[in-house]
Image 1 (tube, rainbow, N blue to C red):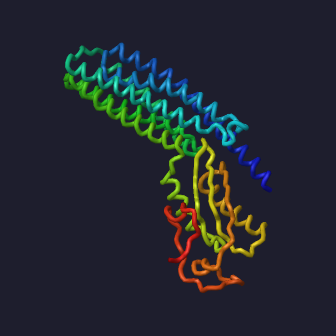
Image 2: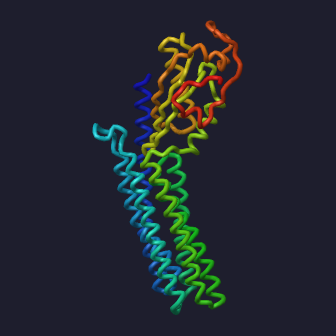
Image 3: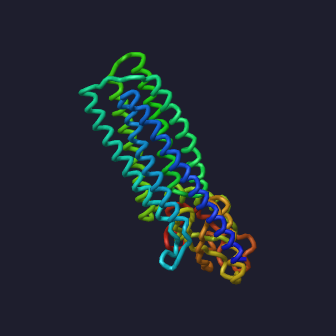
Length: 341
């Protein structure tokens, strides 16, 4: 039974990593094509706003190939040197991508301020607007696919690529709006102002990607994920689950690694206790994906826990049930059994 489950999880994990890798190949290829289109638009118009978009596309291309490399590393099976696999390569990829985005934003900001002080002549704005509008549509579609697949497969590299592509989409939309205003009003300073605004937006996006990648590298607790998990565990709590504590969750690429201590009636035999752990694993797997590694230690209940145990037909109860303790993010992560104070 356990061997079948392990084989099933391994197969699903391989399918996810290969799917991530294939999508990232498309991202890298499309980014190269869009980069060429944006530079054609820039040389046709001499618009700094369009150059801003083209600079970000250079980052898209670099980030796309970095993400492709990191996903190829993350797809490698675990070995004796990497017993948890190579999933953390995605965090490094996201850190590099976020840094590149921030640097691109800073360069664009510098050029925009220069152009605001010394504006340049613009040409064929209508032609340039149509070209970058097409790149915006392509980026949005690719970003949506990356985000949807990345969230489904718990791939930070794909999520980072998706957010980057969609931020590029919205920045392009903003640039188009600015260029349309410039086209109809003739105010040259609008070109620089639009570039300044979106350079700041790009730098903020880069910061958030770096922040999340550092959190993954440092195994920082994912409060949002843990809060959702605690809520689900409370809602589906079995009567033999008297206590759950010392809960820890770590992500390794698409794999969710969960450690915890589960308190069950002391008189259950090994097989019965193991069935309770299996039920816990199935519940987490159902809500958070099939690629789960669960390491659960089963504790036998102690007499002082009778007061928080609501098991109806307990044959060895020593105290009456008084109150059920709701599991919270604070008490479920502590390394001690719950009890009434």
